[in-house]
Amino acid sequence: MSVERGADVKTYSTNSAEETKKVASEIASELVGGEVIAMKGDLGAGKTCFVSGLAAALGFLGEVTSPTFAIINEYLGGRLNVYHFDMYRVTSWEDLYSTGYFEYLEAGGVTAVEWSENIEAALPENYITVEILKNSDGGRIINVEGMK
Image (cartoon, rainbow, N blue to C red; front, side, top):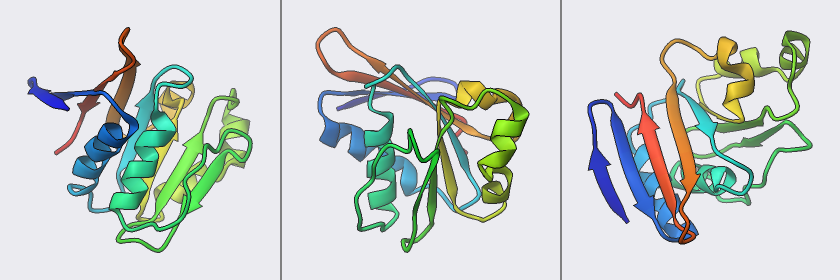
């Protein structure tokens, strides 16, 4: 795993799921609650893997799964609760309100939003962006922007 630092962007290069989880763990160590992590990346890029590392680093002991059909999975009981949304099928404000998204923003945990580009207008002012890109060699480039 390697790290490059830009003005407001940290770029990580990972070569395994474990390295991706380690990046998430590093980010988790800086979270205090109330953060929204807007996740971007193609299908299979590693967004759920990243959230798995995040939840584990925050003390969640269970299994982390993609919320594709549930829309939201809650990972409770750690230092901070993690609310894991999948907004792939959310196409309107009505859809978004029906997920409970706005209530979760006020719950004080960490809200991780896959397919955040579908709800960009509803993201709070100071959100963290995590973009995961696939390399041609099977690795990942992870760009993190907006950490304090």
